[in-house]
Length: 248
Image 1 (cartoon, one colour):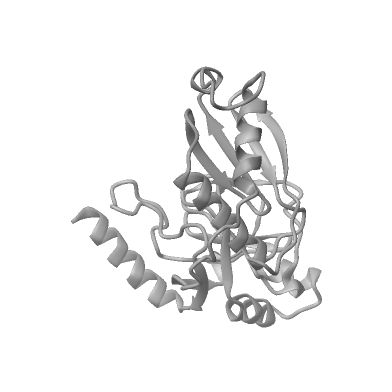
Image 2 (image 1 turned 90 degrees about the vertical axis):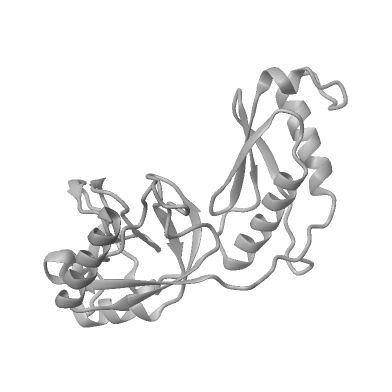
């Protein structure tokens, strides 16, 4: 990580958490750097450490304030000073180069029609044809930058800039599970039926999150994602397979 110049800033998030900010612009290089820092924090936890959560340009560290305040070897008058001091010391040490092996996940998608009702709107907004919208979306390679909103919901960066589209002015009350959405420069997959404001261009038959599986979420941080177009018939066949697997 010698080719990236960063001056992290630590700020107060709550009585039980601080956030380290590494910049304001997301990039794949920064994603790898943040992942390396996060691994270092997890491998060298301070007393009272509970969890750390990465995002596009930040890591938030959660802790037990009762334990932290009792640790004499961490200098500081309060939890923020103790934790931020510990993290600043840790950040002074170089991090190991991240293993760049890619975990590539292929997501089958039935684009347009009843599964992608907003393809035509995105095409009009960006002066494209619906076919171009679909082609640009499934031609790109994406990275999982962060997880959130709902269990298994992955925020994917790397989308073709010609597809940049705003969120809906009025959110939809129920977006079906598996729907592929676009919002700004990012795309993502709804793991459950939830309300949402992203533009929907397709749907995958994959069950993106199932708490009963050893690995509940299909996607995790730093995964590489590609989308594979499928027909409506393939969608229905794969959906039946997924349902059979869940009920077996």
